[in-house]
Image 1: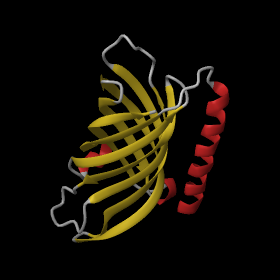
Image 2: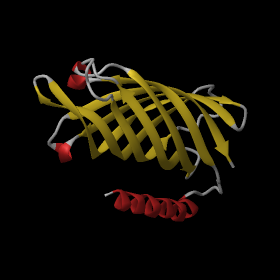
Image 3: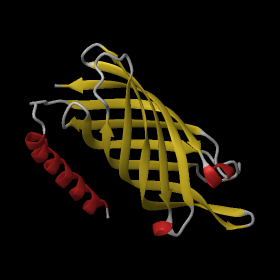
Length: 193
């Protein structure tokens, strides 16, 4: 599964590079690198079992034109269980491909953006075995990431950003527990030309 996903990412990057040359009327060559961290906040029924905690993330995207960019990110989120004797925290390591749309507004001091992604969620969690016993488990699933944020430019190369993303995944191939959480992050962006 991981090898297939890696091959899809490589194919996706080559496809992006091919179409980026042909679709844009302007010759724009830039990449966006973003490092951020913040709070992981559980939502829905998942919030009954885990507490908020932290997450960190790194993103790299290629600009296709002035508004659209595609790429991928790596996120590590931790959500500790409310049950004090759980053998492990809930952790999600997310590797995803994403598309971001940022309307071109050069005269405005904040630039909003929307983002959507599809990723592999490598989950570690505690599974209840009996009334008094639970054990650490691992699962790999596919999930979606939706959200957006705002960018505050700091010169021509750097920018600060605030971002809220909704993360959704289901264990056991879509038939298991649903894990939904928000990541509320602040970070630094760098535009590489």
